[in-house]
Image 1 (cartoon, rainbow over the protein chains, first blue to last red):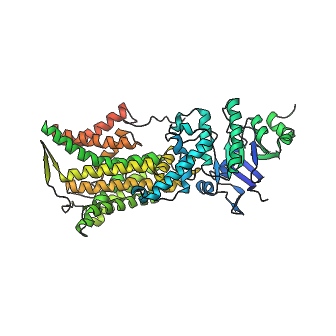
Image 2 (cartoon, chains in turn red, yellow):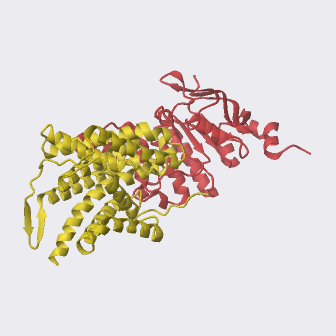
Image 3 (tube, rainbow over the protein chains, first blue to last red):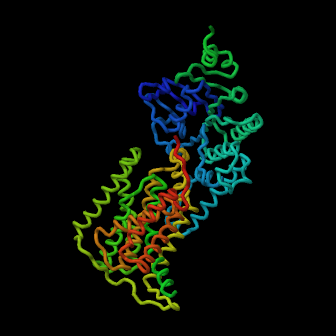
Length: 259
Length: 292
């Protein structure tokens, strides 16, 4: 089987600082990958490179599109999104003044075609397409358990539900690859347990490849099949949870050198 | 009393025109945080477009209105593409000064090609008027009201119910998140300029008909007043621009009727100063704290 995503010697410099340095990864379709590392290790920068927010300074990002690897490094974010890449954000970035339903609809509308004129003239195409994205959006809201709140403003949801809404919005992209940036940040143990369940459910239902950044080690060790470890922008280890727990470089990065 | 009601009618017609222009200011500000000082000149181009197509090509009112809206909409898109897009990530002051420059370019290019003297419109709408009890309403005023109301309803519909409107609202809340949700931000910004400038085009033809006199610098003062209207309503807020436009039109008319027409411009700037002191976010503006 071909990898769905292959990162080759990826580097991103900010001035003299290499925030991500010579990173390579190979991710197979359907894998659930953890990306961990101390604060400032370059995890979010790596996500930003993978989703087009930053251009790579060097290296390639190849995604499997229609059976062929396609170089996506440096492409515009919305174009990468259109290839089936979705993400959530470390610090929640919902469209606050829009309703829960609209937040999901926004992410779906790349799939609809009607033009300004057919909207102004209210042609049947406008109604049928709008109805279609509404129905689909409702389905995603049901997945994350926010159907009842669909008409509330996003900003009025409690924190944990805002995180779930971000996931619903990402699902609405209909992604092949889903990046979750610290999905459990700020959650209590019960919420984290619910989140773990949700991640398993959406992965099954939508056949997703998921890569998540997380500081909550119990979550990572619990659900990730394979883990990559970044430290100072470099990939220092890669393996299953058991291997990572016992890897001396990882222990050093997290706990420091023995004295 | 009858004079007062009469002034309300006059104030509403003037206010509708300001509101149409103010909407363009507020929409552009909402999406790219730029005060587009060339917006008043887009409105002037609307007035000239109508002048040309009606005088030289014999268009009647509605075809001329549509032509104005299309021409101004495209002009707005062009201005954004040439002048503002390259500066999207520059400091705000750079784009602001560019906007003033664009404004002069449009004014003096028009003066070069069309002459700087005043022009008068052919009569497009009858100036018959109706007596409604004590109030006299002209056909022109009725057209101004109706067209403004229809355009505003249409705008609300586009912004609240269509994918373009959702994209505009998403981009104005968080441009980078919108990009990652598959929204083409450049197209969305162009679309905003298209709609805002088309509304200014409609205002242009309506003013040409109402005052029956146009010149290349006619956009400056109404442009500034519409800007005040947008600030009064809360810049970035669409209902705010509508209310602000009507309020400024009304205030100006009342000052002419009961004070002195010498102060018609002064009152508008006085309102601006008071708003900035008392409630800088405007009537419906959001209280955004700058992140430190």
